[in-house]
Length: 217
Image (cartoon, helix red, strand yellow):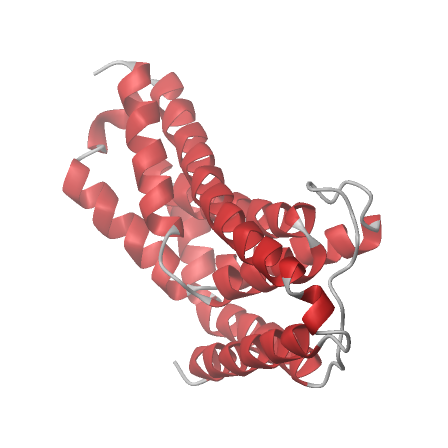
């Protein structure tokens, strides 16, 4: 089996693990609709990087690191759940807001906001217990036990996981951007930003549910 095949396997696995809807996906959609594509991409990039770290640990058999993460899984879930609840409460309590005018990729968006989106997404994904279980199950099914004999295969697999995750988040951001355009088209009918207000409230409510589930898992 050559390097290209391992990269393709990693790409498929990365896409499949990233695809289930969770708190990061909901947050990514909300960020894209309210702040633009740039905010959504940065949010997705943080999640893809977290998936890559977990995938690398699972694929390369880094037993010591895996044990350390497992030992502290409860604390990690508590931290992740708390962050989700804080973000949810912030969105629930936010006032009416109009979609900000910016270019299609959101390049001109405030750097601190982009950094905040990245920092919020990374811990939410890396503390999600379902992510580690998904990687372990899929890797067991596709049999990558011989990957340790060729270091380049491991690099290709991990690289594929990252690319697959980025591909999924690109799809999600594109869908959210389409919804953003539709909302923009109705902006004249919504001078007080009530649509965005309810998007924020619905997103905040869903994040509160996810955060509570993480805390009581």
